[in-house]
Length: 495
Image 1: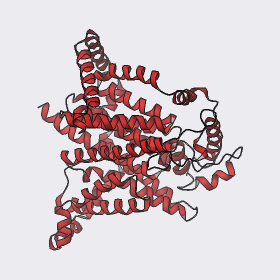
Image 2: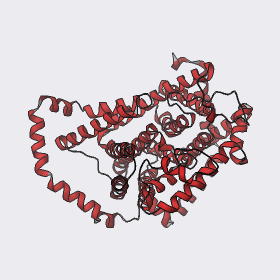
Image 3: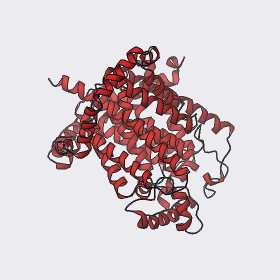
Image 4: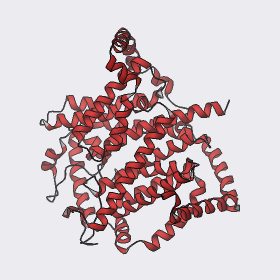
């Protein structure tokens, strides 16, 4: 049994010993004093007070046209809601679906099968989960209330997608992209209504962990026995015969993005659990996941994951600092030369993939100059790029998520997206003050994953793969849920 494994038992003991020694050290005492002083200093900052929701435009936002229209719409459909409740109560099937919370089961099924099923099936499942969640909210009501600023900019970003779709005069396939964006973003908004209890949140996070384990085992299989490789993935200046693992995602960079999103969350689960077998299980998945990130040879994923874990440790887990340092030193000494050269090539700037991206960025910026106001519309980049491309570099996207949002949705899209992420981040950062709350740690873990993946989005378009896009918005929703539960417990503890 895994829980009786000598290796993982030993690793767990080493980690616990290092943590205990650090806590009892004078250095830890000094760090705690410094951290307290630093927090007091930051609390006087307008930026920090904004990020921790102590000050902000919430009152003005509440009176905005978007939220006023939402309230008016809710009052107008009240008679319809009462009619729907009567219909559900009189229908055996609908009542069964509501009572058994089938929408949550569909949600859980989406999460576990996300890397393995086609996008079309994912769309159908997401649409079904949204519809059943709407009916459940009408039938049972809902306890979750979105923070006003967060909800405002989520709706604002969704409107920018809809406007982009309405004024898009591109080919038929642009309609498909529009439907995917619309359903996946709405699905992310509805996640807190699907995962509406602490037990469900922990179930979902453990499903993500189990899925990561399966993907990691498949990645190890590919590394040992080989897998079909696209020539575009291989940088012959560093290694021509290496296998870059991609598990079920079909692309090593995409697989790396998924791992950057989920591994900080699994790290949070490892920290908050008191059960030794579970700690060993999470440690196994973390080890497997980190190993798979290295085996993807995705430089962006390696750097982004390091940043994500650093963010989590800085914000919530100071006792892991010495462990990170030790693992960093051991890792740098034990890593194969191929991986070390691959990582260092980030800073050299002379490799083929870097030069390839430079050409794409220049063409993308030229495109943006012509479409910055209205955007090109969703799904138009590939066709328009043929006009703007330089040095015959081919690409289906701009290799930068922010740049792609700006190009496709114009000024409204980029402003609403950045505002949405800032508003969402405020809700998470506000939970940091709840020192001992496990949901605060989970919320910061999700935040770290989103930060890491968004940083990787500076050198790749993370939403080009719709599995990653769906997971990104799902985690935004789970972050809202975690912050909500942390806030509830924090209010009780402070009474």
